[in-house]
Length: 477
Image 1 (cartoon, rainbow, N blue to C red):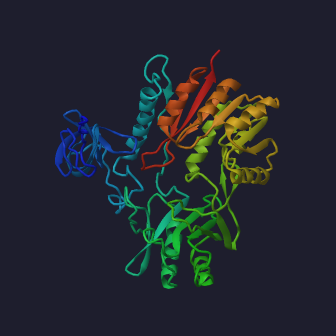
Image 2 (image 1 turned 90 degrees about the vertical axis):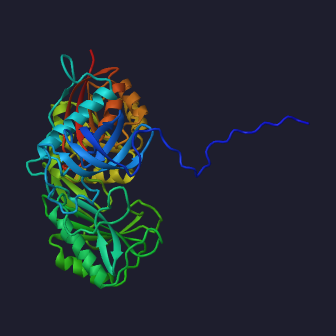
Image 3 (image 1 turned 120 degrees about the horizontal axis):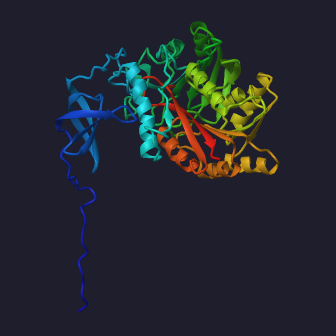
């Protein structure tokens, strides 16, 4: 008889595996909060085990209910503040504890700015291995904030649902797809609130159905509102599952009559079962295809799908710092990787010999060329394609960059682009980042040939955990 061996069986796939951690789900614990993480949650420890507590602040002692545990860390919800921080602030938004749009309204604004500076410093030290204190350290400047950190968002993207026969719209509750209906958001431009309210009321009256993402049925998915803060022009975008809108003319007329400053009403059709907001087809229902706005002296045309910074006041602060770090005197050739619709490029063109912008999205390059023409800028050239492919081709054609500016998405720069920068060896690199962790990772690679001189955090999104940075790198001798 052949010898058989029994297979060792692990836990049944549906069996609950108990983790060897000092807390359990549903337990209420008392914990000292020693800091904040990059998302604004309080960081505490119980017997060495890290617990992230939403709503808690550094220096506080709190009671919190454990919601979720992993091997090395867990998550908990604040239930009671036993000893409050002197920096605790009463959030003015009545929906703050339910809505996932903001995470730091409960922290005094000046302390938010200090926290964001510290987040940048911590990432540079921990991920990049840089020295941030003492002689020879990178200078991380205090965060540049706003004198009035409210009502700064020029764009609202509001999912639409239905409750008790009426349309509702607002931000999703934190970590869910449950819509929190709201009539006012204190970080949105007031016109955004007004326009969304008009669409909800008019569409309800006209029996226009809301999209149900579970059943994949209904018509109106999102209302997107864009405001030209300097011009006062307003665009309302209706994102629908189908091209036909019942009583469309009445809906358009209601928006025209009740939304102050509206110059563009647009429909975007997205029939797909997806979380992506926009579909491929866009039609103008009334008015212009675009609205206009200014950042500093530069005028921009903004279409329904074009990317445009949501805080134009702080964008001007960030771009002026980029221009300063570029050190442009009028004689330099500058390459702007990830140029988008040309926002940074056109700023740089004011004081550069020539700016070359590259962006992988062809539609963005079309917008960049249109914006250059709009401003009479003749010393800017834009090309669509991957930066790590286009920039070496420019080099082969004799284009030598004195300065390279990068402004990548949250995932940071493509490694091939960083290699291209190291090979091209411009005098300066200016790295604009919306993610301190990927910034630190990429600076570590560039530090092979560049000295990271200074980093300037800019608060583009007050009352959230996000922070933008502008960094200056100078080629080593």
